[in-house]
Length: 454
Image (cartoon, rainbow, N blue to C red; front, side, top):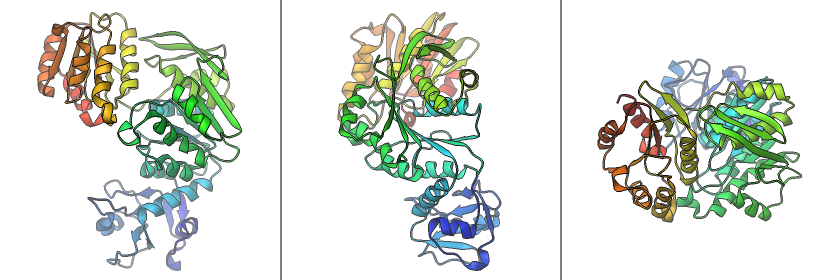
């Protein structure tokens, strides 16, 4: 974690504090008095519905060594306080200056799908040789990125940072905080069409990651993604570009050997690897991680061990094994690309007497959201999925689309989750696979908890 004197912190951020507090040592950063630790520097962020400055006294009572407040805040006792124009900007400035002061390789990952899983796989590989800090959960905005940077210690070797976006300018902000040594875009999908309107614009927003890449940095590009291949022509790419994919022109050429319920076996430039994660798409996530591992001088045995020790962020392609049935829980997010991948994963899982897809709304898809839901319904294979169930205003269109291939008695639209649970209980027999997927706002993670009780 960040351990610096208050004098050093003010020097990093070009701010001021009373000299009598110079030698106080800050150990870590907090923005939440509920989790604050002794000697943390408390940054009082202000949002639309909260003001951290209301909790200054509490922060000090719980052991904060200093608080950062906006200059207009005047309810200050005789405490160590840094006054700034904007506490959020201070936080980002401190993160930027702090990470620039460290001897730490920075890896930045963005893309429509696969960011979090790639981050998890990559970190697992790199931990075989290095001390690694990674983005926790999917805290990939400016606040989450800054907090991750503050978790980096002076002896950290590598930081693996996830960068998310919903609009233009957001990746630009993040990459110019982190200044990565290696940057990558996993792929381009339909998520965030609501704001960005076209897949090409989504790609342009992702390409902002190059703005903060160090002058001698490396850019890794998915050579199978047609949108990325098209939009990259608009940019002056860095000198060092690495491509990967099944495309034979890729520098790292992938080939799937086997993908089933045990995981995936695949080759990269004729070297065979195995990953115990479900889904064809995991080959892409793992290959990105293997490329970075090799750039960081890990050998084949290091990588093979790392692929056996992956700690995944929850609710992503998680197979939950219950006595009577199994749940394929991918309830964290959903868009047409990730849902298609999840369905393909379910198709490849063998030995089940029945497979049921439980689907909810895919959000933030923009003007074509109804058509995109209907098209996904049309793509569901009736020979590999026995029943399709849905709840949610938009998900009703998945059922409408599925009618092109499914008989009516294998399709169920439910107005409420309770109605869905009751019908699902009727459909589950011994040795059933239940696939569960929806956008995070649909709270299907809670639905999974209820399904476990059936």
